[in-house]
Image (tube, rainbow, N blue to C red):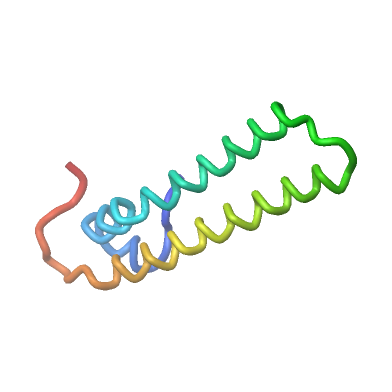
Length: 90
């Protein structure tokens, strides 16, 4: 099982769907950052441990920041969904 799994998103299908829909862009951006970093490593072929470490650590920091932001945003959005609201996965 993959996705935002917090007490708020697990409360209902509607809350889970709202959270995932609202955070999809941030999670996709994290994936794009990973793809760009991998491409940079292949194209630039950095020399030395320092250059490689800078790319890896910089990419990791940006990715973790995006994913944490998505998790916090998703949890808040799920918490705002009122019980009994229509919705859910299409």
